[in-house]
Image (cartoon, rainbow, N blue to C red):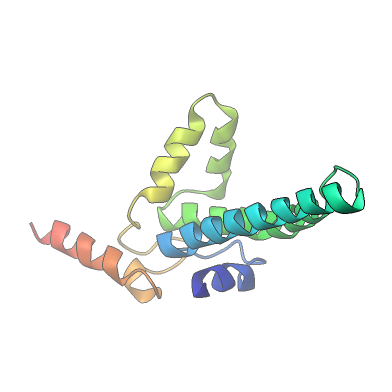
Length: 136
């Protein structure tokens, strides 16, 4: 939960880096919240005759839109790619390459978006794996 809150706190920061934990926990908790809220919308529609539009789901989606965008850009920065790489979604099967980038280990070293992963909380395991790889 702390990674989700960290992503929300950094929702106005595009510059910087986001670890895999921060990115994936944000995606996981947003998905779980959306499932719960969608079920609440269905209950409201069935019992209260509320509009089928899903007012709660729409509100949660709009609230999570900006933090989702910024954590995605910061995750791309963490693998040493610019945030404009999100446009690859427009190319057929481009989302698969982005998925690969999102699950990739952090870029080892300093980038124009921040310091090497060992200096960022939550990326110690990435740094250890990369250190072992670099020593061989």
